[in-house]
Amino acid sequence: MSTQLARTLTEPGEAASKVSPRDRIIATARDLFHRQGIRAVGVDAIAAAADTNKMTLYRHFPSKDVLIAECLRQFGQECEVDWEAICTGYAHDPNEALKAWVRYISELMIEEADRGCALANAAIELPDREHPARKVIEEFKTAQRNQLVAWCRDAGYAEPDELADELFLLLEGARVSIQSVGTDGPAARLGRMLQTIIDHHPRR
Image (cartoon, rainbow, N blue to C red; front, side, top):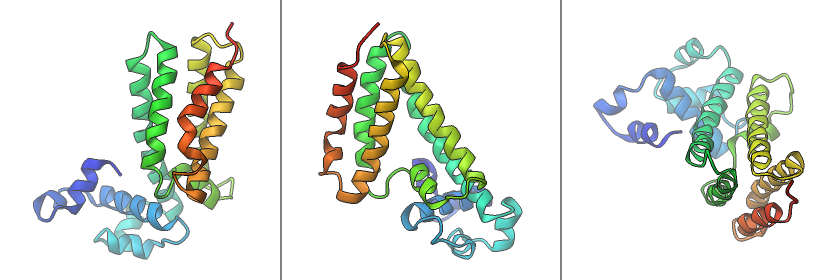
C-alpha cells in the first residue's frame, strides 16, 4: 500500500470517504494479505475491513484470485518506481547504478523484515502455475533479473548473466533468511556480500 493511500484510509471523515471502493478494497486486501497471508484471508474479511460488502467486491473483482493478482501488480509497480529511479539517476554510470542498487537493497531488507517480499511470499502460497497471480510474479521477477543483467553488461562485466543471477539468488535467499532468523542473521551482511560478488567478477 502506498504511504499516501494508507494515510488516507486511516483518516476519519471526508478524506477517507473520497477513496473509491475499488481502491479501498485493494488497499485493505494488500494489508491483510501481507500481515496474515493470502490463504488465511477470505473475501468476507476483506469486505468487512474495507467497509463494503461482498457484492461490491465481486463487482470490481470477479474472484479472490483476480483481486490477489491486482494487489501483487500494484506492489510490483511501486517497486518498479524505485528501480527506475536508480536507472534515471545513474543513466550514464552503470557502475554507480549497481552500487546504488546494493545500498537500496540493503535498506529494503530492513523495511521488509516484518513479512518479507509480497511477491516471494505469494509464490510460495500459490503453487498452481495457472493462478493469475503467478504470471504477475514471474513477469516482475524476470524484469528485475533482466535489469540486473543490463546493469552488469553496461558496466563491462564479462559474464553479466552469471553475475546477475548470483546477485538475484543472494537477494531472494536473504529474504527467506530474514523470515527464518531475523535481520541480525546472515542477511545483516547482505550489502557487503553483494558488493563482494560484484568486485570479484571479471570484466571484459
